[in-house]
Image (cartoon, rainbow, N blue to C red; front, side, top):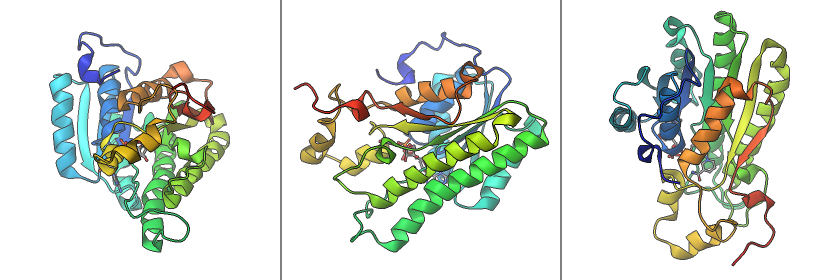
Length: 275
Ligand code: NAD
Protein backbone atom coordinates (compact mmCIF):
# COMPACT_ATOMS: atom_id res chain seq x y z
CA UNK A 1 0.00 0.00 0.00
CA UNK A 2 1.68 3.21 -1.11
CA UNK A 3 0.01 6.57 -1.45
CA UNK A 4 -2.80 8.00 -3.52
CA UNK A 5 -0.32 9.11 -6.12
CA UNK A 6 -0.03 5.44 -7.10
CA UNK A 7 -3.73 5.22 -7.88
CA UNK A 8 -4.78 6.22 -11.40
CA UNK A 9 -6.48 9.58 -11.42
CA UNK A 10 -9.12 8.19 -13.74
CA UNK A 11 -10.63 6.31 -10.78
CA UNK A 12 -12.91 9.09 -9.60
CA UNK A 13 -16.08 8.43 -7.66
CA UNK A 14 -18.88 10.57 -6.30
CA UNK A 15 -19.13 9.24 -2.78
CA UNK A 16 -19.00 12.77 -1.32
CA UNK A 17 -20.67 14.63 -4.19
CA UNK A 18 -22.26 17.91 -3.04
CA UNK A 19 -20.67 17.85 0.42
CA UNK A 20 -18.53 20.57 2.00
CA UNK A 21 -15.63 19.38 4.12
CA UNK A 22 -13.09 20.94 6.45
CA UNK A 23 -9.87 19.09 7.21
CA UNK A 24 -7.57 20.39 9.96
CA UNK A 25 -3.90 19.49 9.91
CA UNK A 26 -4.52 19.19 6.17
CA UNK A 27 -0.89 19.80 5.27
CA UNK A 28 0.31 16.75 7.21
CA UNK A 29 0.39 13.04 6.44
CA UNK A 30 -3.19 11.91 7.10
CA UNK A 31 -4.72 15.32 6.29
CA UNK A 32 -3.18 15.56 2.83
CA UNK A 33 -4.09 12.02 1.77
CA UNK A 34 -7.63 12.60 3.04
CA UNK A 35 -7.89 15.88 1.15
CA UNK A 36 -7.01 14.16 -2.12
CA UNK A 37 -9.45 11.34 -1.47
CA UNK A 38 -12.31 13.67 -0.46
CA UNK A 39 -11.76 15.87 -3.52
CA UNK A 40 -11.54 12.84 -5.78
CA UNK A 41 -14.92 11.71 -4.42
CA UNK A 42 -16.53 15.04 -5.25
CA UNK A 43 -16.35 17.04 -1.98
CA UNK A 44 -15.51 20.73 -1.79
CA UNK A 45 -12.60 20.89 0.65
CA UNK A 46 -11.21 23.60 2.90
CA UNK A 47 -7.66 22.63 3.91
CA UNK A 48 -6.74 24.16 7.27
CA UNK A 49 -3.37 24.13 8.96
CA UNK A 50 -1.26 26.25 11.30
CA UNK A 51 1.57 26.31 8.75
CA UNK A 52 0.94 28.45 5.68
CA UNK A 53 4.10 27.27 3.95
CA UNK A 54 3.16 23.62 4.49
CA UNK A 55 -0.33 24.37 3.17
CA UNK A 56 1.16 25.86 0.01
CA UNK A 57 3.23 22.76 -0.59
CA UNK A 58 0.26 20.52 0.20
CA UNK A 59 -2.16 22.24 -2.14
CA UNK A 60 0.42 22.06 -4.93
CA UNK A 61 0.63 18.30 -4.33
CA UNK A 62 -3.14 17.94 -4.51
CA UNK A 63 -3.16 19.78 -7.85
CA UNK A 64 -0.39 17.49 -9.13
CA UNK A 65 -2.57 14.45 -8.40
CA UNK A 66 -5.94 16.02 -9.23
CA UNK A 67 -5.46 18.85 -11.71
CA UNK A 68 -9.14 19.87 -11.40
CA UNK A 69 -10.47 19.24 -7.90
CA UNK A 70 -14.14 20.25 -7.38
CA UNK A 71 -13.40 23.17 -5.04
CA UNK A 72 -10.26 23.46 -2.99
CA UNK A 73 -9.27 26.34 -0.73
CA UNK A 74 -6.86 26.79 2.15
CA UNK A 75 -6.95 28.70 5.41
CA UNK A 76 -4.41 29.27 8.14
CA UNK A 77 -5.90 28.15 11.43
CA UNK A 78 -4.50 27.38 14.85
CA UNK A 79 -7.11 24.96 16.18
CA UNK A 80 -6.24 25.83 19.78
CA UNK A 81 -7.64 29.34 19.21
CA UNK A 82 -11.43 29.54 19.09
CA UNK A 83 -11.45 32.74 17.02
CA UNK A 84 -9.39 30.95 14.33
CA UNK A 85 -11.72 27.94 14.35
CA UNK A 86 -14.80 30.16 14.18
CA UNK A 87 -13.35 32.00 11.15
CA UNK A 88 -12.42 28.70 9.48
CA UNK A 89 -15.98 27.38 9.83
CA UNK A 90 -17.51 30.73 8.78
CA UNK A 91 -15.47 30.43 5.56
CA UNK A 92 -17.95 27.73 4.51
CA UNK A 93 -21.05 29.90 5.01
CA UNK A 94 -20.95 31.00 1.39
CA UNK A 95 -20.51 27.34 0.34
CA UNK A 96 -23.68 26.28 2.20
CA UNK A 97 -22.18 25.28 5.57
CA UNK A 98 -20.27 22.28 6.89
CA UNK A 99 -21.28 18.69 6.03
CA UNK A 100 -18.04 16.97 7.05
CA UNK A 101 -15.59 18.07 9.71
CA UNK A 102 -12.34 16.15 10.10
CA UNK A 103 -10.72 17.37 13.32
CA UNK A 104 -7.35 15.86 12.59
CA UNK A 105 -4.67 18.39 13.64
CA UNK A 106 -2.55 17.10 16.48
CA UNK A 107 0.95 17.18 17.90
CA UNK A 108 3.22 14.80 19.78
CA UNK A 109 5.96 16.92 21.33
CA UNK A 110 9.55 15.69 21.57
CA UNK A 111 9.66 16.71 25.26
CA UNK A 112 6.56 14.68 26.13
CA UNK A 113 7.64 12.00 28.60
CA UNK A 114 6.42 10.18 31.72
CA UNK A 115 4.65 11.53 34.81
CA UNK A 116 7.93 12.75 36.29
CA UNK A 117 9.59 14.36 33.30
CA UNK A 118 6.78 15.85 31.21
CA UNK A 119 7.04 19.65 31.54
CA UNK A 120 3.71 21.26 32.45
CA UNK A 121 3.96 23.62 29.49
CA UNK A 122 4.20 20.61 27.13
CA UNK A 123 1.14 19.05 28.80
CA UNK A 124 -0.79 22.29 28.30
CA UNK A 125 0.36 22.80 24.70
CA UNK A 126 -0.53 19.22 23.78
CA UNK A 127 -3.97 19.45 25.39
CA UNK A 128 -4.69 22.86 23.90
CA UNK A 129 -4.15 21.55 20.37
CA UNK A 130 -5.21 17.91 20.64
CA UNK A 131 -8.23 18.29 22.93
CA UNK A 132 -9.39 21.91 22.93
CA UNK A 133 -8.85 22.02 19.16
CA UNK A 134 -11.19 19.05 18.71
CA UNK A 135 -13.76 20.60 21.05
CA UNK A 136 -13.71 23.92 19.16
CA UNK A 137 -13.90 22.12 15.80
CA UNK A 138 -16.82 19.98 16.97
CA UNK A 139 -18.63 22.94 18.50
CA UNK A 140 -18.40 25.17 15.43
CA UNK A 141 -19.22 22.33 13.05
CA UNK A 142 -22.46 21.69 14.97
CA UNK A 143 -23.29 25.42 14.95
CA UNK A 144 -22.70 25.59 11.18
CA UNK A 145 -24.79 22.46 10.53
CA UNK A 146 -27.67 23.92 12.55
CA UNK A 147 -27.35 27.34 10.93
CA UNK A 148 -27.57 25.80 7.47
CA UNK A 149 -30.42 23.46 8.37
CA UNK A 150 -28.46 20.24 7.91
CA UNK A 151 -30.12 17.01 8.96
CA UNK A 152 -27.08 14.93 8.24
CA UNK A 153 -23.45 15.58 9.11
CA UNK A 154 -20.29 13.68 9.94
CA UNK A 155 -17.59 14.75 12.37
CA UNK A 156 -14.47 12.61 12.60
CA UNK A 157 -11.98 13.27 15.38
CA UNK A 158 -8.48 11.82 15.26
CA UNK A 159 -7.53 9.96 18.43
CA UNK A 160 -4.91 7.19 18.49
CA UNK A 161 -4.41 3.58 19.53
CA UNK A 162 -2.39 4.89 22.47
CA UNK A 163 -5.74 5.78 24.01
CA UNK A 164 -6.60 2.05 23.96
CA UNK A 165 -3.34 0.36 24.97
CA UNK A 166 -0.64 1.50 27.34
CA UNK A 167 2.82 2.29 26.05
CA UNK A 168 6.04 1.55 27.92
CA UNK A 169 7.70 4.26 25.82
CA UNK A 170 5.93 7.14 27.54
CA UNK A 171 4.32 10.21 25.99
CA UNK A 172 1.89 10.92 28.80
CA UNK A 173 0.45 14.23 27.64
CA UNK A 174 -0.22 12.84 24.16
CA UNK A 175 -1.76 9.61 25.47
CA UNK A 176 -4.04 11.47 27.88
CA UNK A 177 -5.06 13.94 25.17
CA UNK A 178 -6.11 11.15 22.81
CA UNK A 179 -8.09 9.46 25.59
CA UNK A 180 -9.95 12.74 26.02
CA UNK A 181 -10.66 12.90 22.27
CA UNK A 182 -12.20 9.43 22.38
CA UNK A 183 -14.32 10.25 25.42
CA UNK A 184 -15.63 13.57 24.16
CA UNK A 185 -16.36 12.12 20.72
CA UNK A 186 -18.46 9.33 22.22
CA UNK A 187 -20.50 11.80 24.28
CA UNK A 188 -21.02 14.21 21.37
CA UNK A 189 -22.23 11.27 19.27
CA UNK A 190 -24.98 10.56 21.77
CA UNK A 191 -25.93 14.20 22.38
CA UNK A 192 -26.30 15.07 18.67
CA UNK A 193 -27.60 11.77 17.24
CA UNK A 194 -31.21 12.95 16.98
CA UNK A 195 -30.06 15.93 14.88
CA UNK A 196 -28.44 13.52 12.41
CA UNK A 197 -24.89 14.58 13.28
CA UNK A 198 -22.57 11.60 13.68
CA UNK A 199 -19.30 11.66 15.61
CA UNK A 200 -16.66 8.96 15.34
CA UNK A 201 -13.08 8.79 16.59
CA UNK A 202 -10.38 7.55 14.24
CA UNK A 203 -7.72 5.52 16.10
CA UNK A 204 -4.62 5.14 13.93
CA UNK A 205 -1.65 3.00 14.87
CA UNK A 206 1.86 4.41 14.37
CA UNK A 207 2.29 5.51 10.77
CA UNK A 208 4.77 6.45 8.13
CA UNK A 209 4.05 10.17 8.46
CA UNK A 210 6.33 13.09 9.39
CA UNK A 211 4.78 13.20 12.88
CA UNK A 212 6.25 9.86 13.92
CA UNK A 213 8.98 9.26 11.35
CA UNK A 214 10.59 12.65 12.01
CA UNK A 215 10.70 11.78 15.68
CA UNK A 216 12.11 8.26 15.12
CA UNK A 217 14.75 9.49 12.66
CA UNK A 218 17.35 6.82 11.90
CA UNK A 219 17.31 5.32 15.38
CA UNK A 220 16.93 1.64 14.39
CA UNK A 221 16.41 0.39 17.95
CA UNK A 222 13.66 2.92 18.64
CA UNK A 223 12.00 1.95 15.36
CA UNK A 224 12.24 -1.81 16.05
CA UNK A 225 10.76 -1.28 19.53
CA UNK A 226 7.54 -0.22 17.76
CA UNK A 227 7.55 -2.28 14.56
CA UNK A 228 7.75 -5.55 16.47
CA UNK A 229 4.21 -5.04 17.78
CA UNK A 230 2.64 -5.06 14.32
CA UNK A 231 1.36 -8.48 13.19
CA UNK A 232 2.19 -7.33 9.65
CA UNK A 233 5.66 -6.19 10.71
CA UNK A 234 5.22 -2.68 9.33
CA UNK A 235 3.91 0.76 10.22
CA UNK A 236 0.65 1.90 8.64
CA UNK A 237 0.42 4.37 5.77
CA UNK A 238 -1.52 7.64 5.91
CA UNK A 239 -3.61 6.58 2.92
CA UNK A 240 -4.89 3.58 4.91
CA UNK A 241 -6.31 6.03 7.45
CA UNK A 242 -7.70 8.27 4.72
CA UNK A 243 -9.80 5.42 3.29
CA UNK A 244 -11.34 4.83 6.72
CA UNK A 245 -12.05 8.57 7.09
CA UNK A 246 -13.72 8.57 3.67
CA UNK A 247 -16.06 5.79 4.80
CA UNK A 248 -16.88 7.62 8.04
CA UNK A 249 -17.45 10.89 6.15
CA UNK A 250 -19.74 9.35 3.53
CA UNK A 251 -23.38 8.36 3.87
CA UNK A 252 -22.25 4.74 3.56
CA UNK A 253 -21.55 4.90 7.30
CA UNK A 254 -24.95 6.43 8.16
CA UNK A 255 -25.51 4.01 11.09
CA UNK A 256 -21.93 4.15 12.39
CA UNK A 257 -21.90 6.55 15.31
CA UNK A 258 -19.91 7.00 18.52
CA UNK A 259 -17.29 4.44 17.49
CA UNK A 260 -13.60 4.15 18.24
CA UNK A 261 -12.71 3.32 14.64
CA UNK A 262 -9.45 1.42 14.89
CA UNK A 263 -7.17 1.23 11.85
CA UNK A 264 -4.08 -0.51 13.13
CA UNK A 265 -3.27 -3.62 11.10
CA UNK A 266 -4.42 -5.74 14.05
CA UNK A 267 -1.89 -4.25 16.47
CA UNK A 268 -4.27 -3.77 19.39
CA UNK A 269 -5.55 -7.36 19.02
CA UNK A 270 -2.11 -8.94 19.15
CA UNK A 271 -0.46 -10.79 22.01
CA UNK A 272 2.59 -12.48 20.47
CA UNK A 273 3.18 -11.76 16.80
CA UNK A 274 4.66 -14.07 14.15
CA UNK A 275 8.46 -13.90 13.73
P1 NAD B 1 1.56 15.34 10.73
O1 NAD B 1 2.53 15.92 11.71
O2 NAD B 1 2.03 14.82 9.43
O3 NAD B 1 0.40 16.42 10.47
C1 NAD B 1 -0.17 17.19 11.48
C2 NAD B 1 -0.52 18.54 10.88
O4 NAD B 1 -1.16 19.31 11.89
C3 NAD B 1 0.70 19.33 10.42
O5 NAD B 1 0.53 19.75 9.08
C4 NAD B 1 0.77 20.52 11.38
O6 NAD B 1 1.26 21.71 10.78
C5 NAD B 1 -0.69 20.64 11.80
N1 NAD B 1 -0.85 21.32 13.08
C6 NAD B 1 -0.07 21.22 14.19
N2 NAD B 1 -0.53 22.05 15.15
C7 NAD B 1 -1.65 22.66 14.65
C8 NAD B 1 -2.55 23.61 15.16
N3 NAD B 1 -2.40 24.11 16.38
N4 NAD B 1 -3.57 24.03 14.36
C9 NAD B 1 -3.71 23.54 13.11
N5 NAD B 1 -2.86 22.64 12.56
C10 NAD B 1 -1.85 22.20 13.33
O7 NAD B 1 0.76 14.23 11.53
P2 NAD B 1 -0.19 13.04 11.06
O8 NAD B 1 0.53 11.79 11.28
O9 NAD B 1 -0.82 13.32 9.76
O10 NAD B 1 -1.24 13.17 12.25
C11 NAD B 1 -2.55 13.60 12.09
C12 NAD B 1 -3.31 13.17 13.32
O11 NAD B 1 -3.17 11.75 13.50
C13 NAD B 1 -2.81 13.80 14.63
O12 NAD B 1 -3.91 14.12 15.44
C14 NAD B 1 -2.00 12.68 15.26
O13 NAD B 1 -1.93 12.79 16.66
C15 NAD B 1 -2.79 11.46 14.83
N6 NAD B 1 -2.04 10.20 14.85
C16 NAD B 1 -0.89 10.06 14.16
C17 NAD B 1 -0.19 8.86 14.23
C18 NAD B 1 1.11 8.69 13.49
O14 NAD B 1 1.83 7.73 13.75
N7 NAD B 1 1.46 9.56 12.58
C19 NAD B 1 -0.71 7.80 14.98
C20 NAD B 1 -1.89 7.97 15.68
C21 NAD B 1 -2.55 9.19 15.61
